[in-house]
Picture (tube, rainbow, N blue to C red):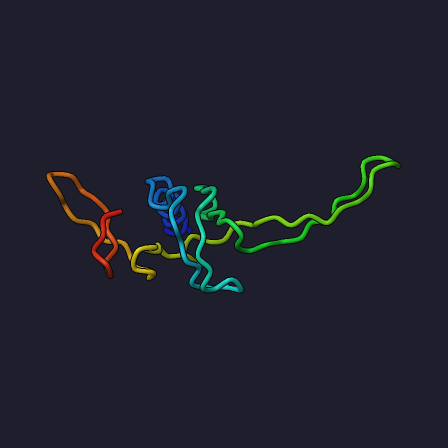
Length: 118
């Protein structure tokens, strides 16, 4: 059991280190919305999930709060696992894994397929 706890701590630190950054383009690689390209809206480091705009849409039925008010059906995005998305290059229109290299004495991330720095 101790090894599992260490693994979950490692995955949350993976997200909190800035790898899943806000406003970055991502392509969904698994699930019902496979192939959709959108941006990250929110990162949940404790659960290892991210909220991607217009992906994993769920409907919520809201009861009226008073007699005069009508009930509603609202649509909202639900979080998905960070492992189900990949970084997406809008210039080359392709998804890619992330690599690391040193440029001018600084460690930077880049897309492996295209070589562009993130």
